[in-house]
Length: 423
Image (cartoon, rainbow, N blue to C red; front, side):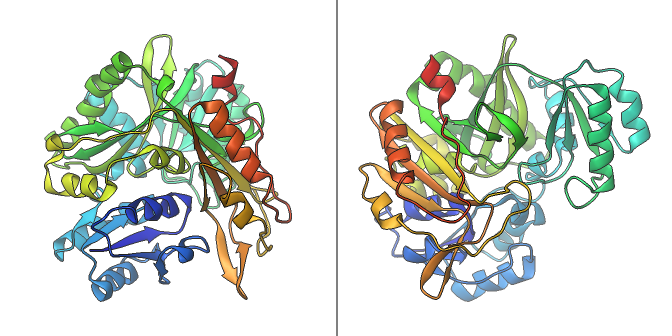
């Protein structure tokens, strides 16, 4: 079968890598893809913000399965359009994608269905926010309502800082375009867990858990990014806690979406804070995480295509996922200046040597091919990922491989997994 993957990042490269392992798959097409994906799949240009262009590409290619990677095409309704045309498509509808597309929608949904989350206020303008800020103790969290590529969350240490963040979001100064609404939340303390599940609209199966590192600086300092590294181990969540999260968060969310006539099919990413009062939902995403996917899929032994088709067909209750025991880790190499302004077009060397480290896969996040050479083309450039019998071994392999890679201005955190290692 031919599988078409929409997207161009490290997540999509990892998806293409996993899909190619299925015995049923004869061809993988990626659109638009990147420099790394071009080495394992046929890549075709497409504008991921153009619904018509994406639909025309699928019409032309006639894939047996289309996988939508990023959140933007999902929020535009690409799954609705392709499904209506008869294409088997993995991902949620536009209505279901509102769980990520609008933080205000998600908070109200959580409240309606009594799913644990932080106290919040939804503000339509600066005046409303100024009044609501007085109801929160510092520190507090200010979030842009819409999609912001992981950069629309600001942790504020004072009410003055929170108001400055609110003004920056409404004016467009912080994200480039004005936010329609802003969410103010209580600050939750604890460890974050990325809890991803497959759903067929009724049933839920969890993937291996992971822990992301969102801040740019070591020691979890500096501004938020799309994610600078992640690890996955069996020790992150025990069986009773996994069951609790399924029963009290993931399953009620899927059941709630079905009750509201927007059944959720695809990947439900529950971003959780493990607090003293139990797991609390920080956010929902409606697709595979990035860089969580790069670590999680390295541990998946099952056929990913079979699981995705079970989601589409509503037969996930008959499916089961098998995982390699141990650990995996992913370290992101970024361009200097990210998540702010950065330059691109720099040649990357050492990739072949890095891939020869045992247990390592190098997924490309922001690369392109220029004159036969792999060059940087984004803020997050590479996702150097590795498996191991222990987290220490997985991290050692990932960092050994990272040590072989070079490009101008390359930056990466050297403390991925630090919280687990301290334990």
